[in-house]
Amino acid sequence: MMQAAVPATAMALRARAAYFTSWFAALLFALVLGVLAASPAQAAPLQLTRDADVVQAWPAVTVLHDADSRLNAAGALAAATRFARPTTAYASLGMQAGTTWVRIPIAVAGDATNGWVMQIDYALLDEVDVYIDFPDGLRNIASVGRMQHQVGEALKGRVPGVLLRLEPGASYTVLLRVKSVGPKILPISFMQPNAVLPA
View 1 (cartoon, rainbow, N blue to C red):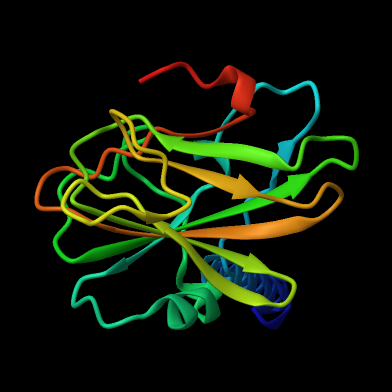
View 2 (spheres, helix red, strand yellow):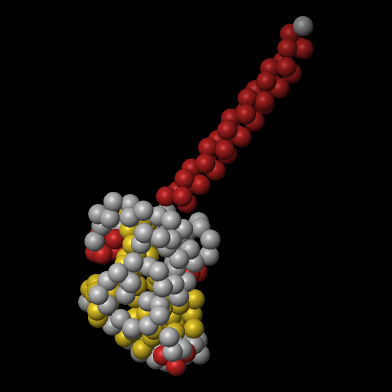
């Protein structure tokens, strides 16, 4: 009877070891997923090159929903880990109360033009403030919403547009503050001036 019990004990030990191994693997997998989820969303910078007349911004967009509109531009820029890739339809954030901050990293090629136009091809945005993080600090470039007095480098036209003066060979972060009662539809593009059609 004792000899029969030995193999059974060995089998029980092997089963327990297999259970703990699979449990540990599942725990490790969950930890890896947690770390990835906690990591800040990183989008590859848009490449503004000499040969690119029009560059669509959505693949590089990350957003931060500021429901209580408490953040200013400097606070939003500093909250990089809170930005995330949109999970909504392409170029649309739907109906969102409060403010939405939009972050777009860009890299200007060394042989590219130093003047670019950023355009949002949707006219019904109430407030849109445009900021650029330059090497010497964050600057408010323009206000281009339909309920705002358009100032700075705003281009008067059918849809929000702004002239960006960018140094070839440099990288920047474009930051938008968007607030609107209606849907936040954001078909954003960067264009060379010769590609901008009359409004």
